[in-house]
Structure formats: structure tokens, C-alpha cells
Image 1: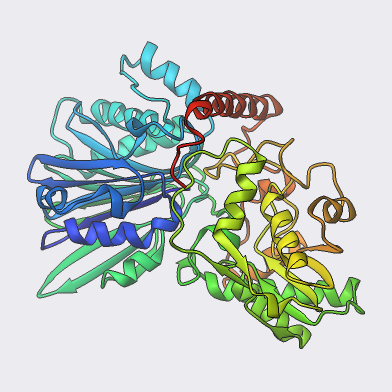
Image 2: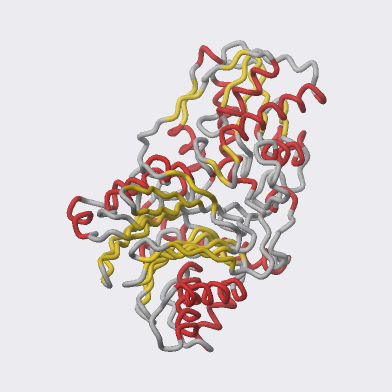
Length: 503
């Protein structure tokens, strides 16, 4: 996942874009970038690290203009440590275009070959976002026919992007001297919302990954960008919108509501906090149905995303809710995590247990999900070391059994704890007395209670059904082989620096 934001305003946008990135920081901590538009000129600054570390006062002063886009990166495809892959990306042909992308293309390698061999465009990194930028720029050039760009040109180009690209993409872009463009893949897998603010007869617009950025910047949340839709906001704030996909259908990623999005966001008409409360209620129903005599003294969440679910689960079961773990918010970045031992140490650095909440008690720990299981195992061990009598572990999400290929860097099938294991085996692996998973249909119902108009979700990491219809076993094998190669490179790079890397 990544965070994207774009603004067309009546005043300078550099501070607003910076503040917007801070609000979307949870969506990506690997790199950040801002590009502002000042007439036909772009001003760019980007780099590796957290937003607060990338930008200095001198950088912000150079980002002049009343239009701009920004991006915070969570690495999915490409190298996790290559600063050249910080976004937004830029091309100067045909009109000067910058682009930020949240998601992942499933046909990126095919498109890269087409770009190089047929469209004669240069791809400089391993990022599928640069591929997407070049596809858009190429189609924009063809649609313009040598003329200046306008809204019709953009819509024609996005139509071709939808025909050529597969996978998930929520995009903000800017065309020099023209305006801002935003579009979403035909399934609406990754979120994108629009806000606006009308004052003194003029309107300003913001497009962002989550509504929290819209609200906090003083804009009114207007609506979501529809799947397959393209939004154009010219430099004078003239607004255009058009459906550019042949057969769009909304199937948002289920994991956004479980974990990725902030609880104070609203995505596709669903308040995330309310959805997570519903998840906790559904999880309580499952415990009552299958474990009616479970002797629970206290419910404790794993901070932070599981708190609403744990709170409602405790209320529904009429059991005490307590904060038993404290998160260290000031831990340094874990630069290199080459093996299980380092991952375990990282968990202990980030969380500590409050002994009084565990000592002599039967504890039900609630987390948003269980993926690799390393974190869950360490949390269970911490609870036992703090004196817990019994440790039960509940997941607000169903078992994660399949990799996500739409912008979440989940492990390979062999690394996923739930692959080829039942709940009893999983409990043994993480050291818990019992593991309780949410039911997939119950999870879907928890979200649809907030917006009954949602008929479909992207649920591939739970059931192996990939909505784009182009994900094959061979493709998953290629993704896993690519991850293995990158992991091997990281191991090799870490051999010399592991002892001295800051943590």
C-alpha cells in the first residue's frame, strides 16, 4: 500500500501536501515525495524515509505553486531500499507528466517489454509505477495528435490505460501547465476520495487515498472516485469527470477495513471505525457459538488497529477490556531484518507488556490479523512471561492463506502461517492455548452493515479469488521467486552492516 494526495488550490499547496502526507504516513514509511506545479514548471523533492525526515524548510520553500501531488511509499514491487524508486515519477514527453501510484500492476513485466520494444520509451527503475506513468504518457501523446492537452485528451488516454493495465491502481498525476488528473482501476481495489472547498465563488479540490487527509486539511469530503473513473481538475479549478472503463465494478480490498486504513477514515461509504466495531461483535458471536464456556477474565488488544474490535468483543461478551500492551512510538526504524531472530527482537522493542493485566489471568488477546505469525508468537510469549494463566488469541480477520498481489507486500504462500494448517496447528505454532479466527462471510457482513450497496470485495488473501481474473499459479510462482531473489540480496547486503545498523 502507499498514500497519494493531490491538490488544486487558490493558495500555495506545499504545506498542505506535507500535512496530508503526515496524515497518510501509516500507508507508507519507506519514502516520500512532493511535486508542485508553478505554471508550466514542476518543483520536486523526494527521498527515502519518513515524511518528517525527507523534507526540510529549504525543501518546502522550493515547492512553489498552487497545484501539486504527493506520495508516501510502501514497497511492494521493486527494491525496498532503492531511493530511485521514491515517487512521484516524472517524464518530460509529451507534455511533462508526474505521477504517484498506490497499488500493483499484475502485468507489469509485459507492459515493460511493450514500452521498451514497441512504444520506444525508457524505463529506468524496477517500479511498476514508472511503467504505469509511461503507459499513461504514451497514450496521452497518441490522444493529443500533436495538439495541446485538454480534458478529452486525458479521458482518451485513461481509457487506453484501463485497456492495457491489469491489477490495482489509484493514481494522482499532474500535467505541466494543464492540471491534475486522478483515476482508479476498474475494480476500485485501492481507495481514492475527492474533497472540495468553495469560498468566495471559487472551488478548490483535493484527491487522497483516505478521507482523513481531506477532513484534516479543511476540505469537505465529497465522494469516492468511482472504479474506472477519471477526474480532471484544470489549473483554474475547472472540474471534469468521466467513466473511462468498459465494465467497471466496485470490489474494494477487504484488508483496507481490517488493517490498512485509519479508523477515522471513510472509504467507499464505510466508516472504518464502525466496521471494526462490527468485526468485534461478529467475533464475539463466533466465540459464543463455538466456545461458549471459554473462561476469559480479560480482553486485551494488540495496539493499535485491533482496539475497536477488541473493545466491542469485550462488551458483547461482558468481559473486562484492558490495555495490556504499550507501544513504543519512538523506536528507531528497523533498517535490516534479515531473519526471524531480528524480527522477534523488533517485536520486543516495539511492544511491552503491563504485568498486572496478565498475572494469573485467562487472557484473550485480539489482533487485526495473523500473517506470518512471528509477531503473534512473540506477543503470546510476552503474555506468558507476564504471568498469564491461559492465553487465547483471536483474529478479527479470517486466516490469511494466499498472497496479495494488488499492493500489499504479503509473504509468499510458504511463509504464511495459515497455509496448510488448521486452527489447532496454528495455536501450537504461536504458543497459544486456542486460536479463534473470524469467518470470512461474517467479516464481509460487518462491512456491508455500514454500506449495504457494496456487493463485492477483493478477498484474495483469504480465499485465493483474484478479482482481476488474470492471476495464475505461474504468476504467483514468479512473484514468489522475485521475493526470494530480493530477500537473498537483502541478506547479502546485511552481512556487513547488521552489527552497526541503527535500530
